Length: 130
Image (tube, rainbow, N blue to C red; front, side, top):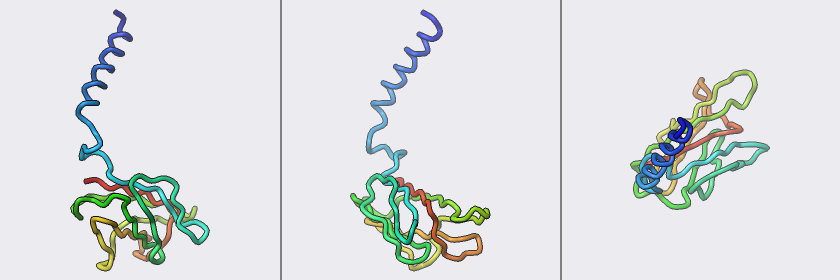
């Protein structure tokens, strides 16, 4: 048996082993994710999983509602935002205000500049883990 054949056999065995251990309920898999942005005065959802809607509630502020709610509000989320300009102006995806909510059915996220001013972005990527 050649080295390539041995590696292929090993990869096959590893794949079969992992297939039985990682399923849809594994905590390392995102329970919801969305790629969206504010383009042409409207929210554009490019791709999503388990997201019913994204609504802009104000400049740089969005509510992401889950298609299937989380069991509770004790989930982790992470997000990245793309700069809306070519000048290198950073955009941060954060929860900044006490009015922003994190609920089993939805999460409010804000996008801001490094000067802490709310600002929209043409691309925000959000992932939810639970």
